[in-house]
Image 1 (cartoon, rainbow, N blue to C red):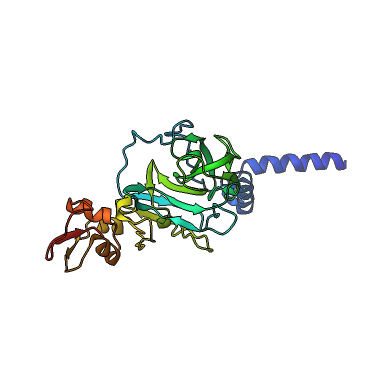
Image 2: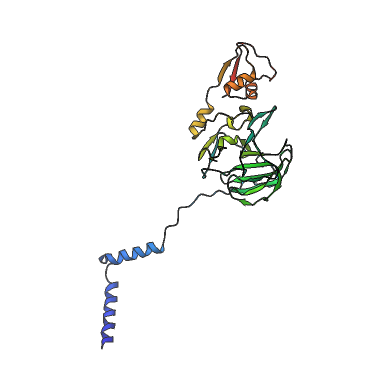
Length: 299
């Protein structure tokens, strides 16, 4: 008897439930929605990723960007706030980015002893690990923002091409291979084949800080003749496109030659390289200056 009654109640309840508008059961609707939300979880916000091997990835060429069209100002972004020192011991810069011995010096030289370990300053992938004329044994790491760092004059390799490396990972050992006067690390920072003054991007002090999470780079920071390899250039960070464009339109300074002036004196006083003065005024380093002569200084 109890079984018959239970079956009858179940039939009535089922029939009644399907015959009613679900709006009359707000609790049931809420329960259904909650279940749907639990089973259809929202995906995490997509993280933009860049395939740094997608374009101009060449493991045999020192510079694969010879046919690339690059427009200024360059735009660089960094997710990190600091970097790993390329050497595990104290970092001493012996020659800076700038004009040196009548030639462009497109990186910085860091003192080391042959056999000292050289490490990657940021995460990335090894694009080049081979001998290059002039630079000797060289490792180039492409980082995830497109920047490349070059480690030259090594005595030995610790990585091979296509290796993924982390910040602080050993790339090789320092030395004096190639065209090197004594053992040192020649460090180059470049973007799409264009060398950038490393000190514009990185603070080479004990803090190991990246200058800014976002930087705009004009030709002033890519042309060595604007700088002297013997002293640190005066920094004027460009943190927005507007600032970069404004700097391009900046008026050039006119300097009037005074009695006793030499190109060397003018260079030191105005923090510009002798080469920059010569190029801007179409003169030679041996040209005689005249009192009252006007010189264009590209600051």
